[in-house]
Length: 257
Ligand SMILES: Nc1ncnc2c1ncn2[C@@H]1O[C@H](COP(=O)(O)OP(=O)(O)OP(=O)(O)O)[C@@H](O)[C@H]1O
Image (tube, rainbow, N blue to C red; front, side, top):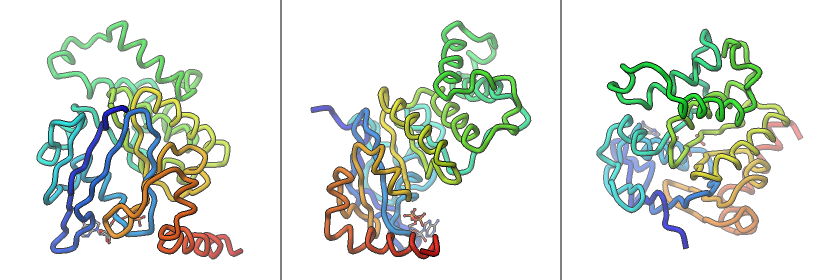
């Protein structure tokens, strides 16, 4: 059995007495597309925040490859150690080309000394080309990033995360605002990404989760309510009671059904 890549042991995130995450035990295994779902306020974003160092765990440990407790490390250090996050809103440089955006991401990975040498190595050039190929933006490489379609901007940002060669990629609602075609393409991209690393995704769109999940964790009140395949999740009475049952009604209200 493969060793877990990331392990959270009794992690608590306490905001002035309110525990958004409460003694959470949680694992992410390599090569898994791992979704986190749950009602509003369940602690999903806080989970990503404390893994990437944006919020601090008040107690507990976060271990990468069974060692290196990340709870005291800076966000920058955590990225260097192999965990990279893409936030919901794209933060690409609109006035730079697609290629230049990827080059900037690549430079962030290089250490200052290496950066001063300036020239790209053959391997780095190949890596940028592979990324453009992966996100299907080779033809658009010289276009300004600001002119790309919404989905293409999101894929570019995913590629900017990937050139940093993370072991784990964290994604926050990656398909928000996308067309059906863009969603399908994003799902395929995520599946490919997970061939070499783990992908942990917070998502509200259950059809998307169902199509691409290897494993689904349902959170509720800062803890794991249930974990398993999407079929198991959908058939679990506790999950239906606190989340999926309510969600079906909410989604129907939102679409006016
Ligand atoms: N910085 C903060 N200070 C105080 N409370 C916070 C802070 N960040 C989050 N919370 C609270 O922690 C709880 C969990 O929030 P979180 O954003 O992690 O939930 P979520 O599951 O991602 O919800 P949603 O699906 O609505 O995004 C919420 O009650 C939220 O109000």
